[in-house]
Image (cartoon, rainbow, N blue to C red; front, top):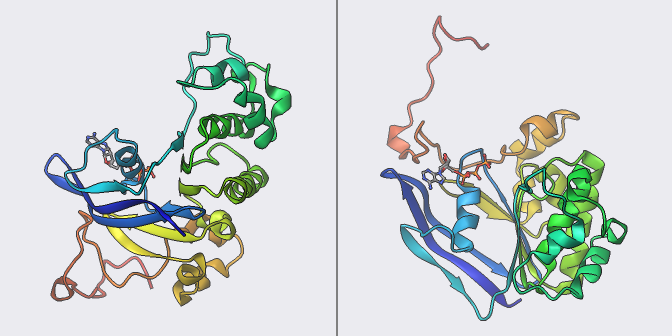
Length: 261
Ligand SMILES: Nc1ncnc2c1ncn2[C@@H]1O[C@H](COP(=O)(O)OP(=O)(O)OP(=O)(O)O)[C@@H](O)[C@H]1O
């Protein structure tokens, strides 16, 4: 598979503190890469760096050839007093060829909503409109920041299936942020877990093949709430997110104040 972009040793600091360090990720044509990580771990910042909206403190994004990015943000922000149909909304995209609009609406399965006001759309319909917008101008890299936000579980599965079939059809690369590895797993080629640095990465099978992960996913009902970031790490972070050297890891000593058994 041909590489599309590489995050090459990306680092970024805010207020003198490292948020991301030495991030190395390559995305290929036809590959779905899912970024997971705790809240505030820098997933959206990494996407902002890719979009050129944030300058990294170190490293660079390498674009291998011509990259046309289609971006789907987390949420749709539109003035609720503004009457705007789905077609009007998609027409606002810069340099859009309006003839493409019915085509992208059909691709995401909402051609019937072309004239509907965007404020009256359901959560799932809104996400499909945002996906349709990302597909305008024929991208070869789709960047999706939490594409299933505000959608019920069945709708989430449908959206992941749709993203996967779009990838199959367009052979584009896909980089998406997800909070739910459990649902997205079947539709992902590569999972990258970031928490300041790349903690672990590989196929979902590789990540979920770990005994600690399997133990958590094996408990019905527990998976959704606790298993998302539960894979094994070969290192320990301190309270600032820094990786501790082996010598600095102090084993826990039980005492009278312990609240556990
Ligand atoms: N321009 C900025 N200046 C200062 N701090 C920033 C800036 N941009 C992001 N941050 C901080 O960086 C941290 C990471 O934010 P980011 O949105 O990238 O995390 P995330 O992993 O996408 O989180 P979530 O899962 O909650 O969406 C946050 O604490 C945020 O406040």
